[in-house]
Image 1: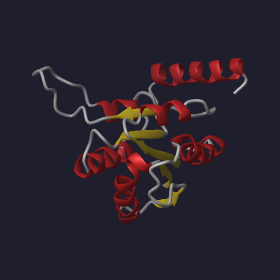
Image 2: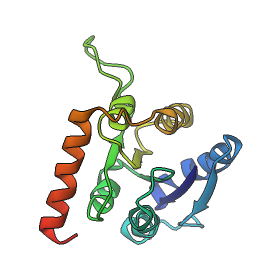
Image 3: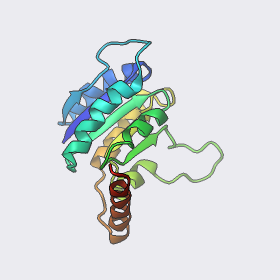
Length: 163
């Protein structure tokens, strides 16, 4: 699989650990930046470069991983592009109140066919990030009719909006 990855200063250290990890898993990785730690950079500059590649390819074997402090702003940027279904992951594996938390990563792939994973680097550590990335990359879209129907509706909204 081809993976485009990008971050600003908030996710820089984690990105630097994920790039070799992804390559070890056998993926082709293109780092869209930032390539140096710069506390004054702006995440839209780098996130847009990675997401453009995934958006224009519109191919299931091309995905993106974006990182930021919370991952929220990065997902907002990503979801401005056509053919993108970006999701945020901030480490909800272990509930704090004893409730049962569904496997969010699995659902974003199997139900929503997400193609951009946005990680909140200030909320998760390297181990959790690697676990989430591996699961996200390994989980296929189910293709179930109800999920395909919903994704088709998202694409129809994009057309209506002129994306």
